[in-house]
Image (cartoon, rainbow, N blue to C red; front, side):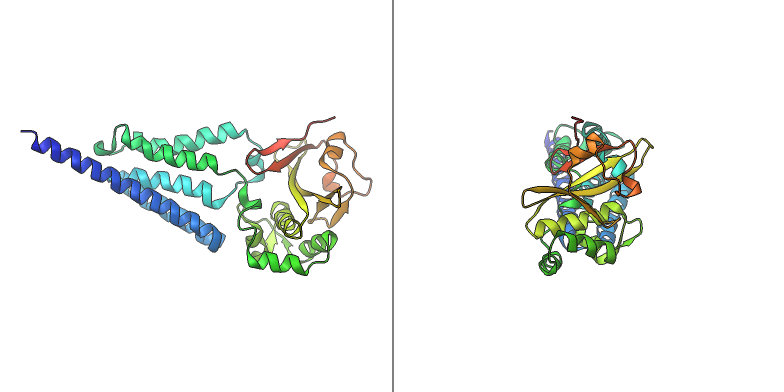
Length: 286
């Protein structure tokens, strides 16, 4: 009498196992592409995962919810960033939205065999993986690629690096997820991509560099620069404007901006300094 019920339980466990396997396989493959593939390939992989997952989810296939969650997780982990304006949102808000996107496929239109406590193990595992992965990793991902290391070795110093980026990267708005390697290969970027490449080159030259955001009173107006320590002295570099000056982020917060600074630097600026893990933290006004 219990045989059909027992068979159903075994089938349910198998479906859970299949869903978990496909989910982790999809995430693993897409994340690995972060180190070897271009931005376009990474985006295509995430979209393909989302499309397959969406179709399977609509058909109530056991793998559907898993692949939908995989697309969300892989998108966060492998694409590595988001537009500058979003980067300044409270991280708690971003985490809540992402966790909702992970869990909803398992609660809405999910097959009956994937309901239950075990089903939520998959989005929880992916959610923890995403929490472990810091935001705005476009500035650190693929940082030790041979192309970047070789270029850094050819430059004579920080001012040579900022000059190289200014002269060789066309100022055209690029994807907000471009890493330094993507920017170098594409040859085009906005201030975020240009500063990301300069930051990487300076780090590979042995200097301690950090990304900083400047936000004016105008909504959504953000400019990205780098702050670097050279022989114990702080400098601010703007590769977009080819400007290099001895000062730090705290000087910005105090409003102490050089008279010959680029026009983009002028205004009611709020300053944020990026650190892997915490993300962007506002520099307190002294």
